[in-house]
Image (cartoon, rainbow, N blue to C red; front, side, top):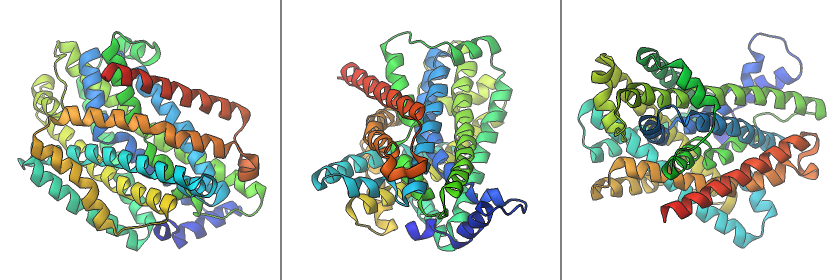
Length: 423
């Protein structure tokens, strides 16, 4: 995993860019890590939570998606900063600085988060294959495992190829939803109100907000992003470190903005097509697929929706496996073959399918589990990036530190509320 990330051509191009080369495209050597991370922000779990939020509450929870995406920009920037400043990823820094029993506890909870992540990704991709091609969910899950394993083998040809392929898939998903949203013609006034006026109409809206947060701010890519930037380039001196961080910051803004637009489009689409037509009962991806074309009067609407779901599920499944490798290798210095990790992490999804548990319930619940995992990654990230001895001139500025503290506190409080609401 890490050897693939340290792609020689990428590092060479980045080094030239830092040394002031003005040749066209030099800055592109730094562009890519945030696109990989952004995949996790538009996985099938986002489809599930945003569709239910849009159909049940209209545009009212758009502001939650916006706030969650702004949080993601802050968090992923800090993750890239840690990797650049220390030459280690978050999991490795935790192992180096925390007591060993706590490190093992961190690894256990990180693996639980990884299981919840893969659950959503596999169910989403399998469901897309079922809707588009009539496969059973079990057959779709098995095919998803094979396709994602083949995609992971692309690392042998350099990680830059992986970035290009996954980036292309993200752009395809974004284009699909922009087309869908333009066809649905949402009302501008309630859309803007939902985007900028916060509020919850009832307790279940808050529960869905936690799901949206868990689907948007993904714990496993906090670990992965630091690994993607940890040895991509070794800056020489403080000036080069600051210049590299500026490049990475723009990478994060572009990647997270793209993911945010997709999430906003999904929720707004559900609000325009279902809620505005009185269909507040549309709470599953399957229902959305079946009803999109009749509701919009466009036969292609459901097909585009299914295609975006498939691309999102496959790409996020690849990223989830990469993240799991980073966490295991960093925290416990142990690795397993990719095919074995792929097999182990897909088992829960297969069990869910065989037990006949409704996919929407499993998807939304998995996103809430992810939300509970956020503080375990965010708290050490905040502590480490605010440590001047560790970070040098890339240490968090005071406003960044206090804003990140606020984000972490709000996340924990929201999760406690959901825990009480659920049980």
